[in-house]
Length: 345
Image 1 (cartoon, one colour):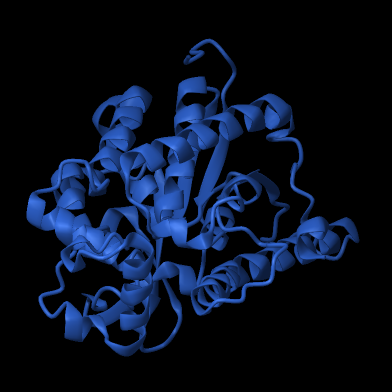
Image 2: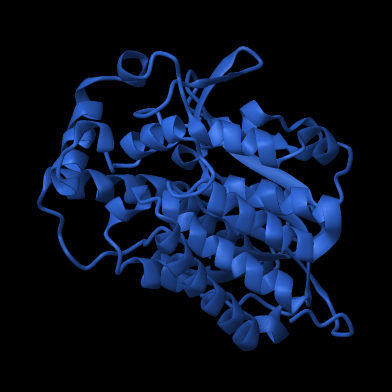
C-alpha cells in the first residue's frame, strides 16, 4: 500500500534484460511503486529491462504510480502467448519463444529443433518479413509522442551498434518505437533495427544495463540494480543448448562487471584522497538480486511466455522488492548496500 506521508528518497534504477525473466523485474517495480517511499529520478534499461522502464515511465506520465502499476500489468498480460494477441500473432510468438505449435512437435524436441535452426538460418531467411508481435503490443500500449514531451523521469535505453559494436544510449526526449525495439533485438530472431541509418541489436551485448548515464547525467548517487541474470551457476553445462545459454549469460553480464570494477576503483581513489575537486563522485550501489531466485530456473525458461509463468516470476519479484526495502531503505542516501568486492571476486 502506498505511504504518501512517508519520507521519500531519490534513486535511479538499472534494469537488466533477460527475456521472460523480466517479469521478475515487473514484480520488483510493483513493490517499489506500491510502497511509495522511492522517488525514481531515472531508469537505465536493456531489452526486457528497457520495456519495463518505458512502460513504467509511460504509466507515470499518464496517471502516476498507480497507473504505472496497471500499465506494467497490462504489458505483461499482452505479451503472454495466452494474452491479447491474435491467433496469427500467437502462433508466431509460439515459434519465436519455443512452443513451436506450427510444427506440431513435442515441446522439448520442438524447442531444440528451433534453436538448432537459428544456428544455421538467419532471420533474413526464416523471417523475411521481420514479423515481431512485440512491436504491435508496444505500439498500442505506449504513447511515444507524450513520453517525449517531458524528461522528469529520465530514460536511458541501450542498444548495440552492429557496425561498431559500441553501445548507443537512447534518451527520453528522442525515444521512438524503433529505438525501444532495437534494445530488444535478438539477432538470431529478428533483423537488425535501423535507427538513423545504423543497424542495432540487443543492448545486452554492450551494457546490461549501462550504469554510467545514471551517475554522469543525474545528481542522484543511489543506483538500485535489478539483476535477473545469474552471475554464477554451480553446475557445468553439457548439452549444446545449455552451453550456449551459459555463454549468453556470461556475455551479457560482462559489461556490468566492468562497470562494477570502475565504480569500485573510483571509490578507492576517493577514499585515498586522490580525486579531490573532480567531477567524479561516490556511487551508492544497491541490488535486488533476482539471480539467486532465478538460477533455479534453467536459462531456456527466458523463452517461456505463458502468463502463469510471468505471474510466478512477478510474485518472486514482489517479495524481493519488499524485502529489499525492509532491509536497505535506511541505507539509501547514506551508503551503498552492495558489496562490490564480493561481486568481483
